[in-house]
Image 1: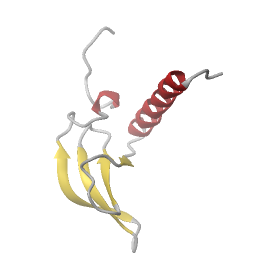
Image 2: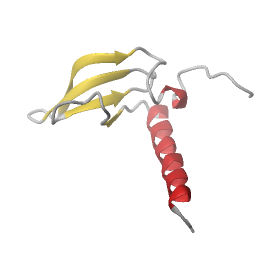
Image 3: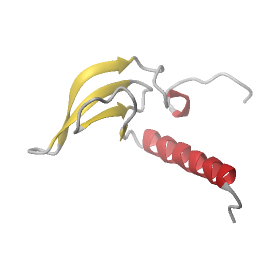
Image 4: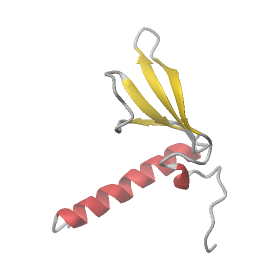
Length: 91
């Protein structure tokens, strides 16, 4: 049982990381908002290769249109979770 906000924050962070890792293993990009998103309907797209793009949802055909490249492969916020990137550290 989660006792306080600090434990809840840790549990949510862990679950979020699991969600991104699972999606990346399956080759699925995920979308989120941060300070780089300025308009309604736009999102940051975190890609399995660790790159990020600013995208806009096109409701007519239910796709995402790339507006701008934000980070190259391996440099995005969630890149450390990508199975496509060699990570340093102990094995």
